[in-house]
Length: 227
Image (cartoon, rainbow, N blue to C red; front, top):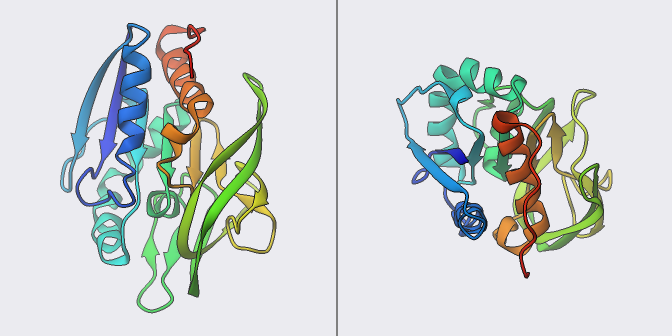
């Protein structure tokens, strides 16, 4: 088996050591004898995103987000097609925001997203910076706690087409008001959790790997690792 990974804007959008999410996926696959094939996808490149089993889209500052927002419009149709065909996405912080409809910074023009996730984000005057824990539930693994570190000024509000990733146990979450964090649509997962989130949460890494492999190979059960 080969897990095909697309890493979107690996240099432009790579803050808070989020690149560690890729390392966690590759290592946990390698330890199980699963091969990985990784494509780095840069500005002005427009691959067929449906070829990937898993797509990573990490965080960046507002200036980098402006560049990504403009470039994403040429990629948007293929990204939406991949999402609808059950490609697994992990989008963190700015990547999470740009998978929504729009991001309006506290100062400056509104940035257009790709509209995969039914949400919009508004910039706030203060940052949410703290350790965070959320309670999630998935058919494959039941109820679990996801932990990380959040550092964002954006306030994200979900529409009816997206479900929250989890309920906030400690921290601020999407907007500091509704008690939820992140968003899920099909196999698209958006979150504000840094850490990086996957090395801190092996169970979540394995969930993403399992779903990504199942898209291409059918039902897959990963051998357990000594975590």
